[in-house]
Image (cartoon, rainbow, N blue to C red; front, side):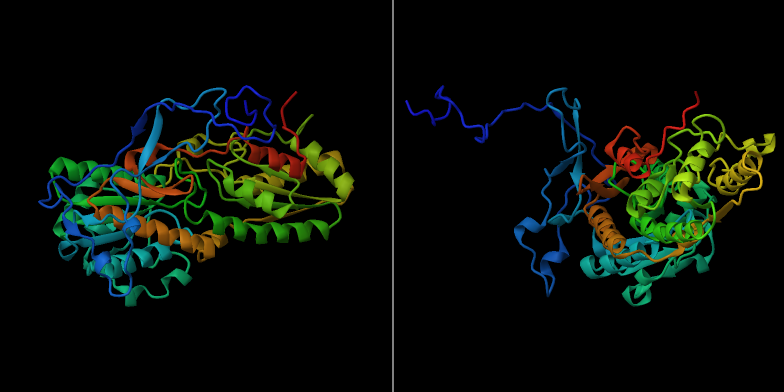
Length: 471
C-alpha cells in the first residue's frame, strides 16, 4: 500500500495539509425592504443603463446576482462553536435590471448633525453617480438638515455634476447642516409636496433613527418613496459596518495635535502634553491615534474607568513617567471620566438638540486636577500642562484619500440599492464586503471599543499604562 495515498494508514508528513469538513448552521438573512406600491417594483424589468454606457461595457460578472450575500462574522472558532444562526446581508452593488425608472426618479440629498470629513464627497458622488450612471436628472440638495424638508424654496437646491465639481476637496457640508428640527409629519409632507421619490440621509446615529421613523411613516402612508441612510460619525461608534466615513481622516489629523503636545511636553521642565480627542461613547479615535503616534504615555477612553489621585491613580502614573522621562503625553477621549466631574442638578438634566446628554469638558477639568495635585504633593517644583483641543480642526477638514475613496463607494452602493428597488437600508462594508443592512439594525447598533480585544492590548503594550483600578 502506498503510504502517501490518502487515508492509507501510513505515516503522514507534518507539512501535508488535511481537509476537514465542517457543517455550518443555517443562514439568517437580514433582508432589506423593497418598494411595493410602485408599478415597476414588483418585478425588476428595466435594463440597467450601465450596460449601454458608451465608454464602459460591463462583463456579466459586474452585476450582483439575487443570491449574493455576505456574512456578518467572517471567522469562527471551531473548537468552541460559531454563531447560531449565522447572520447574512445582501451584497451591495449594481443589479442587471432596475425596479425604478430613472426618468421618473427625483432624488433628495440631506446632511444632518455635526460636521465630518467626507460629507461633501458623499454629496458629490451621489450627484455624479445618479447623473452619470443612471441618467437621473432631478437631483436636489436639502439645506439645514431634516428641517429643510419643510422649509422654503431656498432650502431645495437643484444639483448637477457641474455644480458639485470640486466639493470633495472642501471640508464641512455645502448644504449646511443642523441638529434637531425633526417633525416627522412635516418632513414626510414636505417630501411628498416636492415630489421626491428617493431620499438619501447622511448623518450619525440620530440621523439614522430619524430615517427609520421616516421609512415607517412612508410605509404607513403607502407611498412609493425610497429612503437610504449613509452613516457618518467621526467617532466610529456605529455598529455592524467596518467603520464610518471620516474616521480615517480624524485619526490622521489627531496625529498633528499629539505631535504638538509631545513637542510642548518635551520642551518643558516636568511637562505634560494633554490632548482631548473626539469620542463621546467610544474611544476609537484616541485608540488608533495612540497606536499611530507612539509618543503617547497614557490613553483614556470611555470604555475604561480611571481615577486621578491615590494608589494606582493617574497622578501616580504621571509622576513615575515624569521621573523616568522628564515628560508625559496624555490622550483623553471626550467621553472619559464623565462620572468624575462634579455636575449640578441642572447639568444632569441638560441635553443637546439631538437628545444626547451634554458632556462636561473633561480636558480643562483634567488639566486643573493634575495642576492641583502637583501643587499640593510637589510644592516648589516646576510643572506645566499644555492642553490641546483639536475637535473642530478634526471635524472641519476635507477627507483624506482613503476616506474619499470610501465615500465614493458608499454613495455608489446607496444609488445601486435605491435603483434596484430597495428601501429602508444602509450601505456599508462588513468584513470588507459592501452590503445592504436594514436601517433599523444600524440605528441601534453600537460599536464600543472592546477592551478585551487585541487592539486595546496593543495600546497597553505601547503606553505601558496600568489599569487605574482603585485598591
